[in-house]
Length: 337
Image (cartoon, rainbow, N blue to C red; front, top):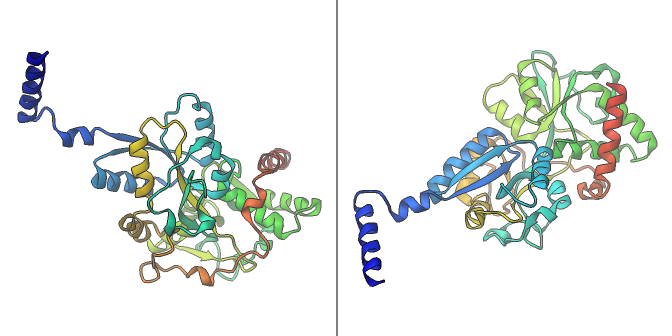
């Protein structure tokens, strides 16, 4: 036994001496599988910066939140993912059974309304809804300024909009408009007009791309996306709807049964790391959920205090009936498209 132990020690030392084994390489061999609904540019940035900071490789699997959820449920008995990231608060609240608790070291820096008291998810950034229009196809005076403007038949098939079944922010948009109209049968009838005016995309990222290319005169997207196009010199305009808006939190959580638990905890913390959040603000224009970060001098976006909220609308009020609402939307689409 003693000789074998000495021999094993000698072999390890020899491998280390010739570069065949080291603690650094062992750490570098760690990995974490991230199911992300963020745009690829942010996924790539996160993977690169996370590996620089920790030595851990992040395998980014991109899809819409609906697609990711179907995959997670299909893999429930044998999870292949470790992290669920870039997901709206509404979706996270509806699927907490797929997540397991971890109290991030940044938990106390996130406002209570943007974190789970049972530690199953934590907010990373805040989303605001905007209209984005192509300046070559629409003059500023012609572009809609209100949610109610989108019901006008003149916009038939001209509004790029994600499928609410695949996009959490599209679901929030739909329910907010439904709420504004009274959330009754008459409101549903008017929302049929809205859906008739849309061209549904399978992914949220396809909306700004199609508007910028001139495939559609306008679309509904998220503030950070539109601001990024503006900063890049695209010939687009951005409108904050007059009637009000919704602050939608996106967050991150650890998938229940994650095979790379330690790496998953590190990634969850990393998502709210100050250096990373500041880089994300500068590079991706995403509002941080952390209450201690001031980005007003970094990006050309109005402070939250200047954003009018839709009176009475609470996105979490529409969690319980999500499946019923989505089923009804699907029926309408099949009937009118």
